[in-house]
Amino acid sequence: MDETVAEFIKRTILKIPMNELTTILKAWDFLSENQLQTVNFRQRKESVVQHLIHLCEEKRASLNDAALLDIIYTQFHQHQKVWDVFQMSKGPGEDVDLFDMKQFKNSFKKILQRALKNVTVSFRETEENAIWIRIAWGTQYTKPNQYKPTYVVYYPQTPYAFKSSSTLRRNTPLLGQALTIASKHHQIVKMDLRSRYLDSLKAIVFKQYNQTFETHNSTTPLQERSLGLDINMDSRIIHENKVEKERVQRITQETFGDYSQPQLEFAQYKLETKFKSDLNGSILAEREEPLRCLIKFSSPHLLEALKSLAPAGIADAPLSPLLTCIPNKRKNYFKIRDK
Image 1 (cartoon, helix red, strand yellow):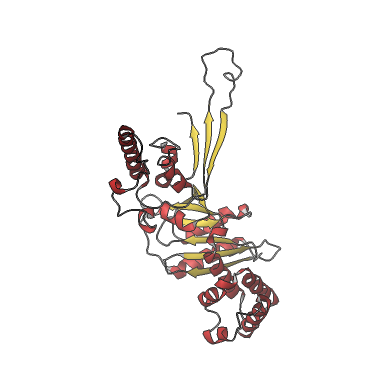
Image 2 (image 1 turned 90 degrees about the vertical axis):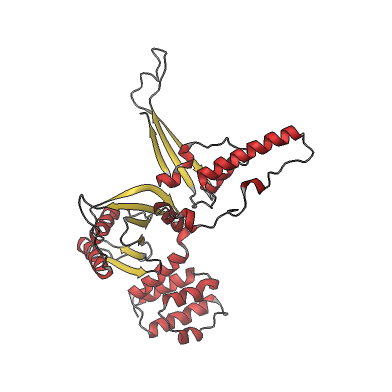
């Protein structure tokens, strides 16, 4: 086994938490069950790693084997990446073709290798009908950097692909070209949608969030839910509060549904508007350039936070459509301009 491959595998194993190591190694399926049973996973991690590297050397692990281990680790830790969504489209009158996995892999790899002398491409198919692609980029003069790869998750016979954000932006057009041609599409565009949570992005673009995520209180009628009222309050106030809270609950349920929301961390709004004034001679009125403003809402779970605003009394119901339209518009980057 090449020293660079051994070092690559070593670094990958060192990243894996001990409580996940056995699971990931079994998913890798490179070392046999009998080989794994010879490893004492209760000893220090450095000793475990040395033993595993020795087993990989015996089986002569290749660079592609090491890349597959890295893909599996990334699948277990998807949230450590920021994912962008790309949408492809067919040309006018083009029909949907039957998908050939082998042809897709060969075409994708050839396009990249023709454009770049030094690039390694690895694939891994998953049970959920997705194909994970790992690209390690080099240049005409340098070998591929295995420690700064780009990951792409593509769902065959759909127009959507998810790409991990990378500092190597110069390779994005080439990657888009390879993906478009290999999947037999006509063009590709980057959507205004980004998150660390790949499953949530997938649920939004495929409109599966009302089925994929667990529901909250879906079996409890609205009238039976606790309204948190003080029994010592005046009965007229209690009635008014009850009616208002039921109205807010109804509007919230109609807007967001009665299921948990896809997980996004932020929504960003860029505003561009001309200054308007009835006063003549104003400095701003004579300004040709529009006024620009950037507003960003952030939360560990933004859509659930927005959903809770009105019931908590923090905001009036209904919320602005600019906040509630995120899943339906399939975007969390917005540009607002004068009509």
